Length: 250
Image (cartoon, rainbow, N blue to C red; front, side, top):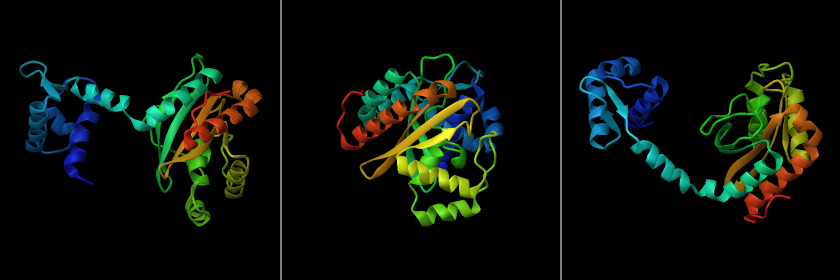
């Protein structure tokens, strides 16, 4: 990885975590880098308009330029533009949280878009969050279901199926069977395996030779009685996104 890029990103992540102006010495200490290196990055960010000195000796803080650029990038994101109508329709019709994610290769994945339910009690994730606990989440099961058989068995051979809730599948045979059942019906299911009281389902679709997935998540008492309808709408949405036929959800 590029140390220059990593170091620059470390600065922005540091400001996000600290939530306050920081001086050079404090940044150097928190990032564990030489003061001279800290000065070089800060000087560059100041010159490009990404940082400002809030007051003499008052420390530095990011300007709104970074957010403005991020907003502009988000407005023109081809994935978001392609998916927004269908996923918004899906969320509005079901009033459950709808999530778009992407496989990054191997067993890695990330959430790209989260459209939350309006219910006070709802499932929550955030864009940019990496997929964890592959054995205990519908996103993880979708990722595992997309692996070639040999790659899946290699992963399973060394996997530590740590229980996250009492419902987590910790048997390798049971996990294999659960994923196989999901492949057969077209969608994977998480029955309170990662969060007590929450049920999620997910399926994958391909676009430009890349694999994405859609998840629908909500409290078990709302999800389970309507699961057949929810699953049918999930599959229709994934087909629409894969084929480019953007018809409204039923």
